[in-house]
Amino acid sequence: MADTSPGRSRPERSRAADRSSSDETQTAETTQRVGVLSTHNSKETKAILNAVRALGHEPVWIRDENVSSWIEDGTVRYAPEVDVLVNRLLVTKSDQPLEDLQLAALFADRVPVLNRPAAVQNTLHKYRAGARLSDAGLPVPDAFFGRAPRSLADWTDHLPGRVTHKRTIGTNGRGMTVASPEETVSPKIDGGHSFVQEFLRTDEGRPSDIRIYVVGGRIVGAMRRRAADGEWRTNVALGGDVEDVTNELSDVQRRIAIEAVDTLGLDIAGVDLMVSDGQWYVLEVNATAGFKGLFEATSTSPAPHIAALALESADASVARSRVSALASTLDDSVPDCKPPLDEPSGDGGTLGYTTAVTVCGADDAVSTVAKADTGARRTSIDTELAGEIGAGPMVGTTEVRSSGPSATETRPLVDVDLRLNGGWRTVTASVTDRSDMQYSVLLGRDVLEAYTLDISRRVEE
Image (tube, rainbow, N blue to C red):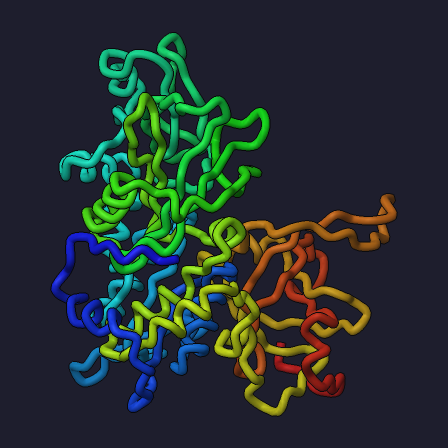
C-alpha cells in the first residue's frame, strides 16, 4: 500500500497533490499526451506507457527514431509534441550522457518533465550526489574522491579500514570492488572516474540493503535485497533475493528516503539504504531505478503511480482508486505507441538489382550503391565502409559459408541505419572484407523480403 507521508513540497506539485488526495472519478474533458523519453526497451518503460493508456490518456514513446526539433521563423518546434514528459533516459549507461540530458532539456523548456535534467545531473555523479545529501544533513557513508593516483592515494588518511571502490557514474554494481588500506586504488574503473566509500558492515550476517521507491513524495513500495551466496553486492541484476518490507519501514527510513529524493530535486527515484551499527545510511539514489524486482517482491507496480503523477503535472485529474487497481499488475507488453524502426518506402517498395543507399553509423553517413542478393540471408557491408561510418558496437557474430580454406567465416554483426527508396530502416549487418568486390553493400533477404525486386532495374554506377 502506498505511503502518503509528504516530503518537502515543491510549488509546482502543490495543486496536483491536493487534487490527487481525493478519489474523484477521472474527468475526460481533455486527453493528455504523456511522453516517455526512453531509447531502450525496458519493462519499466513499457509499463508506464501502458499505464497512461489504461488511465484514459495518450502515451507517446519518444525514441531516436521519432524525435526531432526545428527552428523556423523564430519559433522552436519539436516532434512528437506532448503535454508532459517522463524522463526515463538511462544516462548512467549512455556513451553521451550530456547529449542525452540536453535532449531532455529541450522538452523541459516547454512542458513539465518528471525528473528534470538538472535533477538527474545532480544524481548522475555518485560522489557529488553524496556530497549534496551530506550538506542537507542526511546520513551517507564517508567517502573520498580524487582524479589522479597521487590525489586518490590520500584516502587512507580519511577512511581507515576497508572501502568500496566504485565508479562515479555507473549502475548495477558494475566494476565495484572492495579494497583495504594496503592496496593501491586506481582513480579509474574501465576508463571511467572512480571514488572510494566506507565499506559498511551490515547488521545481518548476509549482506542486505533496502530499496525504497518514491514517486511524487510518496513511498509506493520497498524491498529488502539480500546478496546472492558468495556475493557482497545486493543488486537484483547480480542475483540478489528480494522480499517485501513496505509495511515494515520505520519513520526514520521513510523520512530519509523521501528527503533524499527531494534534496536531489527528483520526482521519481529508488533510494538504497543500509544499516550499520544501528545507523541508517543512504548508499545511492537512482533516478532511473528499475522496478521489476520491486514488483516481484511487493506485487505493486510503480508504473501507474508514475503515469498518474505525470497526468497531475499536466493538470489532469486522476482517480487514485484506479491507480491502486492498476498497480496490482505489471503490464510490460509492447505498447501500440512504439515507433516503428523502419519507415515505409518512398516509391512503392520496389528495389532493383542495384540500388542507391545511404549507410549511417556513429561517425558518418555514406552514400553508395548496394547490390541485391536473394541468396544471402543477411545484409553485409565492407570492413572499410564500416570503419568510415563508425559502425558499432558489435552486437554479435554470425557464421557464413566460405569459399576459402575454411568451411565457414565468423563475421561481426553491427546495427546500422540504412536509407533506401526514401525510407530509413535499422539493419543488423555483418561486416566482411568486400574490397575485391564491386559493391561495398550487399542487401540480403533480411531487407529484400520487405520489397518487390525488379532485377532489370539498375542505378547509374
